[in-house]
Image: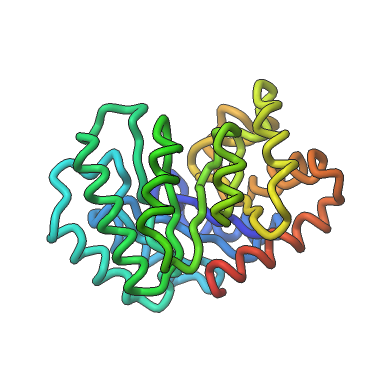
Length: 250
């Protein structure tokens, strides 16, 4: 199994312990995500120390107030690291009023350009802005090798996402008791576009809900998605592992 979106540097425990527990649970690859230039060094250092950990670098939409050339240059510099396999997370978040919408859009389009230049996939954060994110990606992202809708959470845009060929990555919230529509969406994503993640330290799956999440818990999410799709855990594991390898080139 793989965890295609985690924030190891945000977890309270030491990275070594987190990666060890993930390996013991059968998690062989982890993509840890840098949220801004302040975290890139730590994110890349974790990836350097662990063969099974790779990195993504980007500017989270909630942190994009004042985004400009300096921030874009930091992303581009970090993207040259050999363990960086995606740009992000980037996107739009109109649920929280942490950054002006125009700054978010400017940062998003800038990072699409960086990903295109480096021939890297993008990891997308979309909240209360899913349709606009898809619009911008379809309009500006044709040269991207892949688009991953991280923590997929809006079943209403599933058909548009699939039509565009975007990967849909499901996190622990798909296991919540009040999320039957999200499980239904996970059941209908085409095999070749399905991914799983934890978004650690957030969104711990239902069996451990309320705890700090970590990459080892992706197996709990996998069990629920496998049941929703009517396949075995092993079959789902093989599918998601192959998809992630194709997207992130590990």
